[in-house]
Amino acid sequence: MPIKKILVVDDSPTERLALTEVLVKHGYQVTTAESGEEAINKSRSELPDLILMDVVMPGMNGYQATRTISRDEATRNIPIIMCTSKGLETDKIWGMRQGAFDYMVKPVDHETLLARIKSID
Image (cartoon, rainbow, N blue to C red; front, top):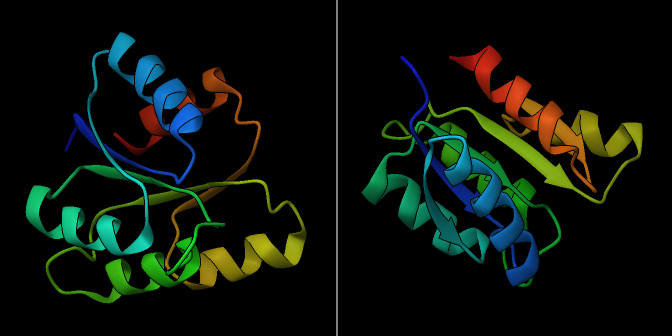
């Protein structure tokens, strides 16, 4: 199933805007969330084709949100790419164990991100 609708989750308005602009320019429909809780709610209500998830956010972090989304019957098939400043190998392993499909360290290279999105299609 081709990816059309992407949920961008980040507590930084600058990051959300930058990712949204790149994705919209490449033909994707984008919705955003600024917290883990909002990401879970929007993943259920909007059923995006892909989620780009930040890790470090106030309240519920991206690891917790990823675990919840990937274990929920309604949302478990939505691939999640973690886009985070946490770049240690242990962070990546932990993210993948929570159910992430892929893991990218910020600053995210937009061309690499677009290539990874296309590889999921």
